[in-house]
Amino acid sequence: MSKYRILWTDDEIEILKPHILFLQNKNYEVITAVSGDEALDILHNDKNIDVVLLDENMPGLSGLDTLQKIKQINISLPVIMVTKSEEEHIMETAIGRQIADYLIKPINPNQVLISLKKVLENKKLVTENTTQSYRQEFMDIMNSIQSANDWKTWIDVYKKIVYWDIQLDASEDKSMGDVLFTQKQEANKEFARFIEKNYTSWLNKKTDDVPVMSHTLIKNKFLNQISLDNSLFLIVIDNLRYDQWKIIEPILSDYYKVESEEIYYSILPTTTQYARNALFSGLLPSEIEKTFPQWWSNDEDEGGKNLYEENFFQAQLKRLTGKEIKFSFTKITQHHQAKKLMENLKQLLNNPLNVIVYNFVDMLSHARTQMDIIKELAEDEPAYRSITKSWFIHSPLLDILKQLSEKKIPVVITTDHGTVHVKDPIRVLGDKNVNNNLRYKQGKALEYNPKDVLECKNPADFYLPKLHPSSRYIFAKEYGFFVYPNNYGQYVNLYKNTFQHGGVSLEEMLIPYVQLMPR
View 1: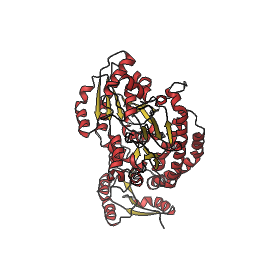
View 2 (view 1 turned 135 degrees about the horizontal axis):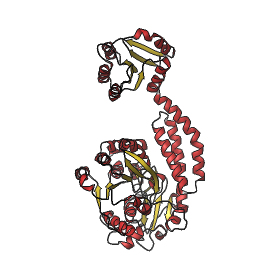
View 3 (view 1 turned 180 degrees about the vertical axis):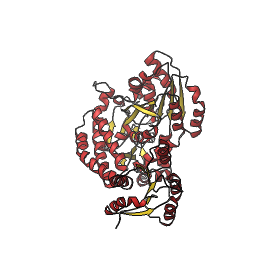
View 4 (view 1 turned 30 degrees about the horizontal axis):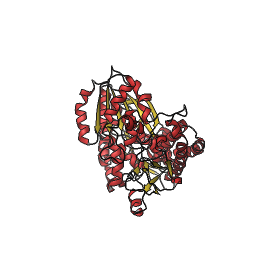
């Protein structure tokens, strides 16, 4: 039984009989046509053709015209164009009409075979190669997880995990995805132990080997990129995970080249209220509360928690540079705000610095919890990446980036924290004043199993506000989420397999910082 059925269309098909015999011996069924019209008749009546080999230079209906009509019959049917011509405009037209491959005459049978394998068996071959390569690297990654004792190694481990997550997602062997998830679980378990051991040492400067974190990002990474002679855009996409960045990166490759790509550490809690305020202020939460009490809001306070980011940022720039740097600050939470920004973009190019906070990804994660249709569209991490990619392709943000590229404006893309796909309920008890975040809790009367959480018994050690003399914070580790015993089953069903943030995981704490230069 033949593996694949090929329609080979060429007005000199008799000359190609040796090639056809060669393919038949390789278990391909070859159907022939001597004109574009004959090929189209066959395709109208035979829906089981797997690929078309199409001569570009035929009398009557040309190869390019035939190609266009083939796509009208079946847009997904792969077509391999065969031509004597090497003229650039013919290649560009064929590529623009979505050919699968391109062969230049004279061709030999092995060339045709390789092209067919590339077109027809690409996914299978990629799957086999990806599976084999991951198996070979599995133990190296596992050894790195077990021996990782510094923040740089954990960044390397996470980059490898994300790389294989994306590669295996594109393959057909889903069993290896299960193996990778088990490895991710082990990585997050060990990472939580690492954070528990080292986090307060970083904050309290008890070691010289400290990663760039939320409150040091502007000072240590961004500040030296600001020039009073040129415009620069800082785009903070709220809640953007590193794997989501890797999915949208190729979309930007036509407009920007990546000058540098790094990962930095979000502070705890990994939420907008704490991490993003720390980013813009250059201070840790308890320092913000002490320095700017008029702008800081605690968990128990009413109203928004991120209303003064522009003020924080202005104060930080003045503190670091001693100058009043002119900048714009735009927060996008709705589509019409992004459209308005696009209309006013030209006016901003006179500023040395422009900051855009874009909230779509964060809204997506919350919608993932609240809306059934979003739950179905983003039921797991590959789907979550996919919906992020789809949003980005059609978003005003991409249009803004295209315009900035045309104006030769450099851009920095970063975020404040990531998010994690929670699976394991953790029982917790607390009074009515305990905050409602599912990945961290703050209060004075918390009851829980210490083995399930990272404890912060003394908020001062974590540079967190202390609302009451007996206040403490707890953080969910790995894939856990906090649930009260009352209505336990209802809340488990509601929040299990949703995307949450606030706790300790690779996905929440290790986040991208990317410098882009226009092409």
